[in-house]
Length: 325
Image 1 (cartoon, rainbow, N blue to C red):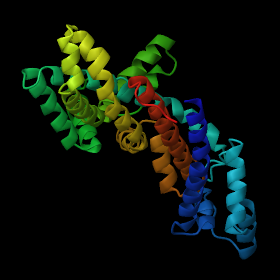
Image 2 (image 1 turned 45 degrees about the vertical axis):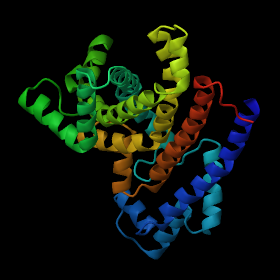
Image 3 (image 1 turned 180 degrees about the vertical axis):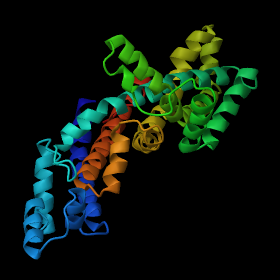
């Protein structure tokens, strides 16, 4: 297993290099002149050719493309993500200020949603065609049929506009800025309810369907029949023999969905004015803040690489028959 992990980490290096080439190339192939966008971001009017030459020197776009890439990659390798064109602040600082909001949305929307959806899928598989199964499948079908922006809009319309139960946007009330820590956290959690529901509905729907289908398939296997014939209780058969094998597909689904999580966060954070990384990325694209776009895209790619590596590790824990040579 250790040798396999070393090989996978070694293979991750060329994958990472390839991703950096694609990200850097796409940003520099984007329409428009990067100097014009830089001046627009800094509210600087078009000036003479000498000022444009100075800006090109300052940004570094007057050098060959491979030189620009080498300098950018060198900074990335030492965890220097660059400086924002718009704010002139370090991008790492900008991301740090917004990371907490996105992590809290991810935690309450996915880390809690995934176990809950697996539990619903297991109940549906253990009692097929029961009212629990029909209810779970119906809810999953509804969740799969509705896009995130529609779910968010409907939640705002019903629970914010009509009922007034939850705030329609933001992460904290302005009146709570000087309140106690407990009051601040409660208010922040109150703002988090609707965005968390929005990001978790579709994820729970897909995960529940996969968990139910895989567990139904595993329960028909011969070794499950053998385990039951030995007199093992249904709980032991489910937990020790059936559930662990059925979770392999669920783990694969979760690993593959890590990249799409950001797209859901972008939509949700935009709808609810949630001050996270996804909303920051949308703003960076609108103002053509290329260093920010490249940094966030690269970070998401790294998360996907390591989530797939973590999924492979989970396979060996769930199914001891899986061995990597």
